[in-house]
Length: 171
Ligand SMILES: CC(C)(COP(=O)(O)OP(=O)(O)OC[C@H]1O[C@@H](n2cnc3c(N)ncnc32)[C@H](O)[C@@H]1OP(=O)(O)O)[C@@H](O)C(=O)NCCC(=O)NCCS
Image (tube, rainbow, N blue to C red):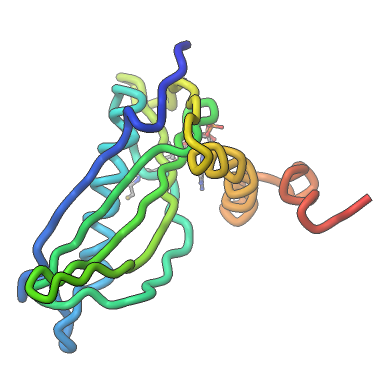
């Protein structure tokens, strides 16, 4: 199967924070942001594999800065690496106050998607050929992150996680 570039999967989403999106403090609700992130990440995964996808897992998300009512949300999603049927998507999120001309980072996250065939069974996806130093770094780290999430999801025994173990156990 062919390889594809991360840039081919780049997806940029822009949203405006309206009153119905906020909590009692006038900040964007975390759940609404995660919903938008899920859509942006799913589109990115679909651009890569050109097939329907489902969300398999979402890594821990910490919200560094709240996004205020009336501010703009920018979400950038791009594939880091694919395995057999799964794809890891990296997301970066910023808030922007257009009046004050101030842009601030909100959070980053990794979502994992699985491509499905017409029988809703996992199907193989193209591999990823990273180009830039940043894309290569994310590609290299993806194997570790995959092992950690599969262990936490009960899908891998810690003994099998060689890449992850190498981080902690030195010869
Ligand atoms: C994700 C799903 C397709 C995996 O199906 P499965 O029967 O466990 O399939 P497999 O064990 O063959 O795994 C398929 C791929 O999913 C990956 N996967 C499974 N569980 C995972 C998890 N918790 N985190 C990350 N990847 C996971 C596997 O690593 C494998 O990837 P690979 O082929 O690249 O190695 C299935 O669990 C599913 O449909 N879940 C519901 C998805 C959904 O509805 N999401 C929306 C939220 S409601």
